[in-house]
Image (cartoon, rainbow, N blue to C red; front, side):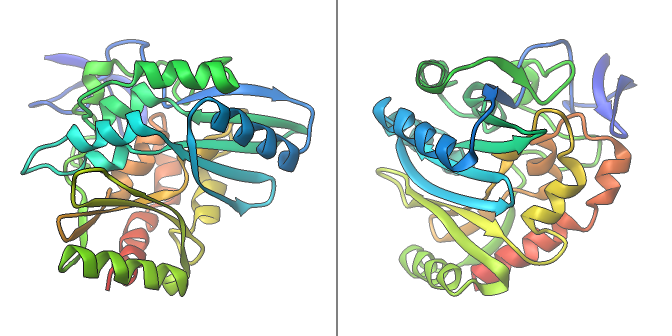
Length: 296
């Protein structure tokens, strides 16, 4: 079957075998621009947090990975309950979808507020509920001016089994970076993040209700996988993908997982060119090594 896909970093027609990457029209994009205009990042962060809180979201974390950018991370009961019921005994990765990231970024003298598209995320992470109601809450709270992050978008059904190109990992192929009793492993990660081991620090923690599952948001400051290094190389468009950050570390039933960079980064940058991809080729391994240090 001939399908439109992202292979070798560009959109084109390719022959795919099996259920690989498939782009079949403009549908979903990874981010929404909420607003853009004059202002101050700090003031806009305060205003955005207040609006999100008033709309029923819980602010669980905030950090500035580099100058001119602040990330706000939120969750709510809908996101957590959906994470709890997503996945099964053999695929316990629903917790990755428990957070919405909101980026506040200065670009060209204007302040952009943009956030993860919850429906795109829900399909990418194979969630039970596709979070249209959460999309509506975010629109009401802070706006939804424009979808962005991919020139043509990705069809929702294709996101369920998406990868960057042939040979690259899928969502259900995360890296196992630590193992132990659930409580002990969570405590160890908390300790190591507090100590900023390997340059990693905690942005947020979300406990998934009714499950042995905890999602950590991890800021990466050192090496080839550092947030500033990766984003400085690939996040250069007019509308910034700041809400890609921070990286997730999921502890599920005593095993710590992180999504492989070739999937996690590319899902936020689905139109990444091969040149850009090669510019961060050492980042995925470096990120895994940092997460392993955090979980040891």
